[in-house]
Image (cartoon, rainbow, N blue to C red):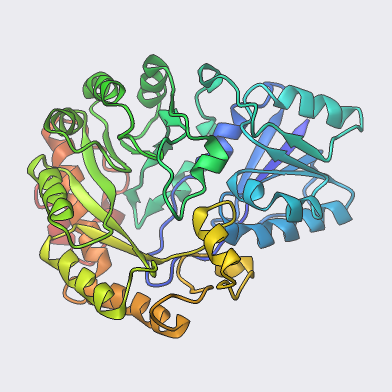
Length: 425
């Protein structure tokens, strides 16, 4: 059976330097397919879909709300040609009812141990409209090594610089953050994968640079420390969402190759200032993820926050506006208060205001979003800040003899300063 797995394109954050990482959902899903299924993967962000290629069955993997309308269009096109389509992924789960009107089948939940039945139904011509396993999650031990072989790896670089490969060590999240749908999607129980399986998967990835995409590594101190200890011999360099703010954890993370973290910066407190400093003290960079437009935010608050970010010397910052994605507390509150004025899902890209803020107009919040990007990167452009982070990782790799230049000529031109990038090489 030839199964075409498609990852729809979507617009990137306005003002953000555009680069593409290998998607995680599709390669994890592909690992759940039987061995006799021939998988062709298309990342539409990097290549177009040829709708005339012969195929038996099409799967559409939708991660983001901003992907779903494009995913529906792809599904409609294939169905008009008589090809069966199944949709899955986070975006599908958040928009399941709408997706059902465009797909022959919708898969809700985690795929491990489920796809044999789906494919049997397909072969019999008895494909179910919905496969709902949201409350019947498979054992975490069933999660296998992702099928990275379906990726066209040479597509995922930035001007010749090798980007990260994505991997996960756990599912679920015991936190329940206001703008986040993770507890709906993966549950509030922290479900760590067996560490030996995680280490085996990491060791088998032909890339020294990883992104641990777990919702948060800071959920179980003992597990976190054990994971980092086992990672040390791999000599990988990695980024992740927050690490627990304890000296013994940060020390092990640094030894294990922590390169930088995505850290939510939600106020101008000493707690944030000290936390960023501690990361830096252990040689770990920080990309601040900064959400604008919460009900406590005034115009002055947002401007003070941007000044604070420059003061604490964040390595990078990514600014978004509050976006009320379905199945989040933000959506429930704003929808109940009749404050959402757009349900055009293409606008749910985290850089467009789709609701009425409490202390300003939507237009003013949109203006402050641009102000944040422009002010933070005024003295040093985003590309140069990225360049400095890559300098750091190259220095770390050189120190332990793991540096592998993939395309030195291209990389040396990546930021217009060929003498700088390899000054320490």
